[in-house]
Figure (cartoon, rainbow, N blue to C red):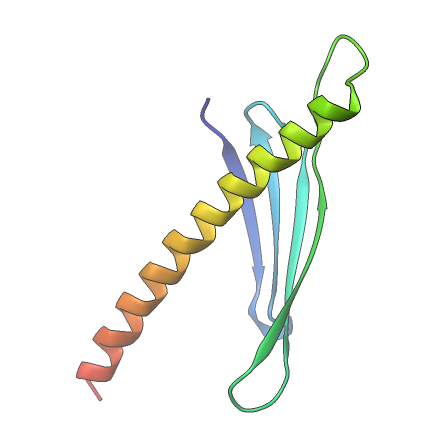
Length: 96
């Protein structure tokens, strides 16, 4: 199922917010903040609230499966972002 997200960037604070507007986890919210840790290092803090709609109580096993699926989805999204950023960086290097 398609997810529709609203992303709010705050470059001055090196942070961004992600709110899911449509999809299976509508109203879920995530906050990402980058903390510089030296000239060539940083740390990413992540806070998230994943909303899961269900007509009955979810078992611990089902919650673990949902969390695992979300980690897989997020991991793929971060890999795609890293690849795009690397491509952009290489273009910038060629023009400097």
